[in-house]
Image (cartoon, rainbow, N blue to C red; front, side, top):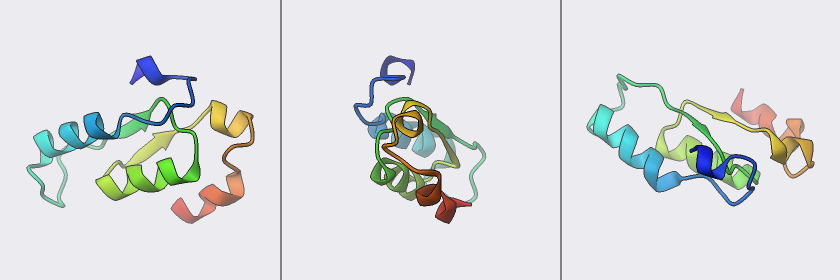
Length: 77
């Protein structure tokens, strides 16, 4: 969601849920791999995005400003 890029105001979780549900019909076998981007601010944002089924997350400013550490992200590898 480019409107949230660099804003550190949280990701568009509802938008991503809608996209995932539209293309997967709630099935675990996803036909679309969604990579969330924009607004990610905390490790909790990353956890929520993983929980709703995002396959990846682009994190920029939150790492640059030390809001999320690479150490915290290791568990998602």
